[in-house]
Image (cartoon, rainbow, N blue to C red; front, side, top):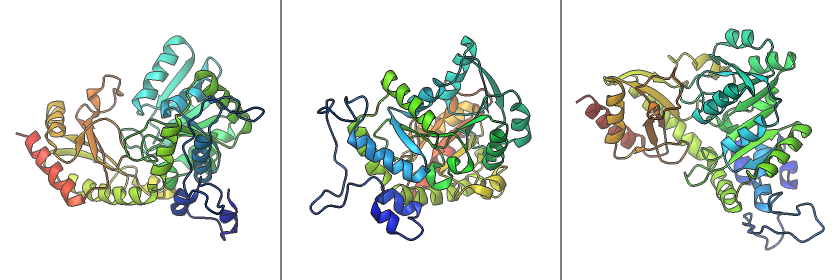
Length: 378
């Protein structure tokens, strides 16, 4: 943390942290932005040694996320690479309790771990606190994704983390949908928090990157070793782009959340929509829990289209402003029917569309969504 931050009474707010963190030292004529360091080789003797072990551009990004999350941070080649590195530190036969709905890449990884005997996986409704707690007996790891992708279920993280840690069970959190601006799992007692930096933190749909943050020095060492041995290192240019994208995270998320709430309200009464999932709606099943600890509800909406999968596909293909594509968290709005992917969780409705709401004008977004939904019913 810089002297500037130390001198600020009470520290900086997250809105200011995203702008100020990870900057170069304030020397006369020094650059305002961190430079891209393009080198695989470093002069000896020193701490880095080789380009797989460190890079000043990574370090700046890691320092910024560390300030936001409150835990030492490592950047990885992708969010899945960060998850894979953590899972590689687990003992064979580990018992994992996790959501039955979640990021499809993780769900596929868990199925393969179970099939090979590397893990026993207990799938639960992560929003049902009692069901989760009942499943924890005999577990070694509670893996929380909240809000879940794409069902947008919200776990009562303060309660679950408290109980898991009291039982000496490790806790990992994928907080990609929420970002550090809406929830901070490490402050609740989690052992590790993962982000797909590809999404909201970079925010421009132009990088693949991930991060892992922890307060556990021993775990940090294991993760660093796994990153180096696995070669899952970030590129310096991608790290620089992500750091640049981070600067506008607060204002991007504020606008996208505002858009999402308005769109969710309108979708709730649209004749082509069966069900809307958005925790910011007072009528949503997860609104009360989300309101109890989150600082916002995010900018992801999921909804079921009347007419089944074919109608949902037709809606996605009929949009003109909203882009029909996979991914989320960028400045542009994206949507897709999630079950067009074969590895989507079986419990997700086949007519569910996941909508990542961007920062466009809300009236323009609604006009496009409305016309696409109307076409889906024809």
